[in-house]
Length: 365
Image (cartoon, rainbow, N blue to C red):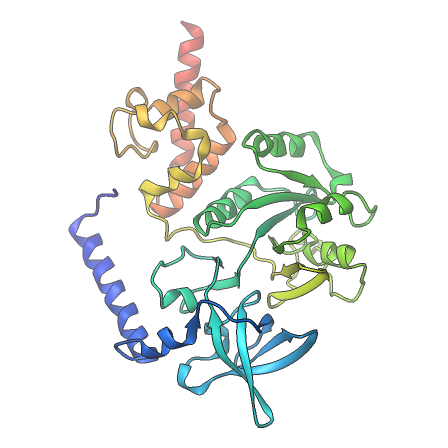
């Protein structure tokens, strides 16, 4: 368990009280509306394919319908439902109404998911729901491959209990350094697929992974998520973006998460590209749990609450594993960067230099 000082505890309490007041304003103190709005099953439901501020497009019996939330929910639509959600709808006069939300199997958020029932239907930065598989799309070039982004998304997906694979798009531009980065994830047992929409490479392999699943494409702007969706659907109508020559970063072409059916029982949710990914809501003590290569090492550290950050080299077995080459150094550096951001400290480079110096000392003995 993480150790909080009095100030942290005070902040946590105030934050929880603030969230509770917001929930009570939205749903009433007893939350009758929420309990009535969420149902366990429905024989005849539609799937949310796109959400706007005050309404949503619903795929229902092979038709797309525009629907609004029932009035007593008392929230705007994009706070409550997301692409991939299953909803019970009804016709009221000329209007189509979202009457109930089916209980979700998963929810993907850009911040750490709150396990409370109310927050499970909204009031957080949610992206999509009921995901069977997430595809972390990266590019070999323009924009360049950055493992730190992969590591952050793997944390968020694991926290949401969503299986993930990695797709390297523009693989015809791959370098030896890119291959080294990808081999790290292959060694962790993560499936890596290499594609090129320009040269039609790896598309069938990617389709095989997505078949009979509700999948989601996530990644930075400009990596080719929409181009991959086009290739899978054999359709050129989805807008694609190019990378800025000046910044080498993608422009945001997809502005909202959208849902596409490409085969029976097979769908893709294409999400807006993002340039940064916040994991600051994770507690420092739990971050190490998202690095499986630490297993078998962290339990042997001298201190049970060791963060493998500021602790002395002699007391931290994880640092010793990195120095000996048995724990991947690049992944450990990514871990230090994440920890540095959460702890609001920027001296992780010195920590890594300390590990290197200990390794060099061993070699000279």
